[in-house]
Image (cartoon, rainbow, N blue to C red; front, side, top):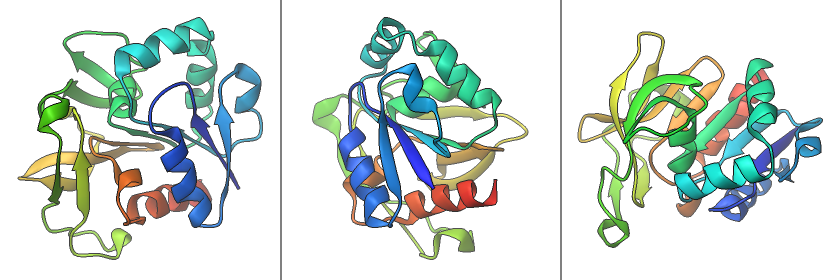
Length: 192
């Protein structure tokens, strides 16, 4: 198994460290050819407007859409969630891969970043009762479509959601010691 990590800007190295610590190899994705022979893709946190400009500069929009069309698992965190959302407020381009509406930076500015424990986890898939969540200029999920499952909440609001082969979270598990979300994503890939 090999996981691609979009490595144009943001926390791509921290995601690679997490996946590698779980015994799985990674490849940094910076050009179209890098999508070859990867089993899943992580879209890391960063700044969504900057990521979009770089995706366009490196002509990766069609490659991302093609990868999505192959139904291979994709996990987007923070800015990656924004890139995957069907609707973004304020409006900007997105891949529309998961039926959620998100508000950019809704948990506050950089200075408002915080670490908090999630609500109690009801799913046995994570193997823990709660999860530490790092929020940095995080998007807030405003609405969730019918086919979307909420896997994790903070103060009763969705912060980790899944629709088919797409996983999206508003927090940064790569900045925590807890590997449960990355393990869950790897299990999605194994099952696909």
